[in-house]
Length: 345
Image (cartoon, rainbow, N blue to C red; front, side, top):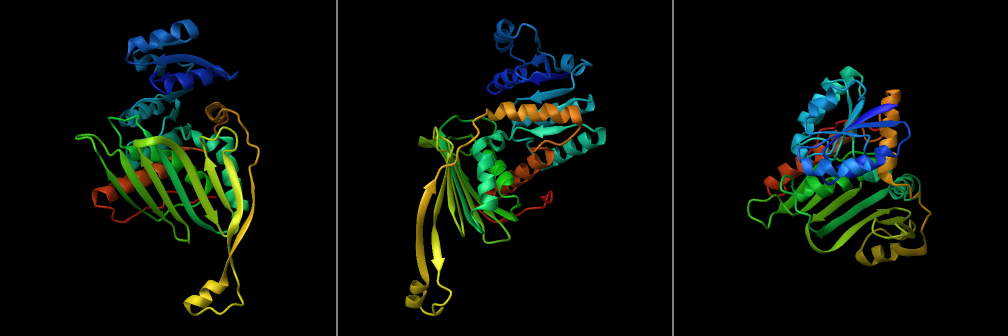
């Protein structure tokens, strides 16, 4: 059995507790939160779980092998580092840390101690995103564009911008499905509430190939939209996370170029280009709850000493982009080059 402690029982903590309690190989030992009224809700539903307001109780328990952290981003690094130094593997809510340097330090500490660091990039464990990755790598051909919209009305965060709250989902998905890192980023954002972080942002990711990527995130939209369009030389795909059944739709549509047509002049260019309008298909998807699969993978990695799909390096790559995008916004949308954090296999 793997002993687990959960730190933070606010918005996401109850989901972690519920899913950990459903894993047969988990001994859910502790839940820690500074607000006593939150912990009171656990007593009736999880009477075997110990509750505390002091993190030291969790770290001093020799039967705790790993800790899940669901607290504000600003606290991730300090809490995760304390866990690692106490010999506990960590599962950290997204984004992994507030800075890339903090993420690097967590990775180094975990590697030095032989512990596991995982970041909660939940969407990459969904059947829809797994299928999206398969389609992108096998069916679309050369990638031309990746265009994502993630907007809704609220929920406003007091400690992070809409980019660090919502765009982190899209960046983690792109990191998983594309298998290549951008070389630069540019971004524009604005806050419409004085003294608050940006509530609307537009990110452009630049790659060293023909791929163009764009992400739009917004807390001021009248509708909730979670839609991604990906176009390639052979096919196109739409991923709509709000669709109840057909979240992935593959379109056999695109352009055809006549290689025998003359290549000079506007009229001749029009003669070279044709349009292909084929069928649309919607593949069947695995509907297993993503968080449950993600936590089961984390527990297995702790048992075996292996790396999860969304390991510390994946979290670092996402935070590196967010940091550069924040810098770009401060500079009026200038292009900021990115350091290569890790080569994909």
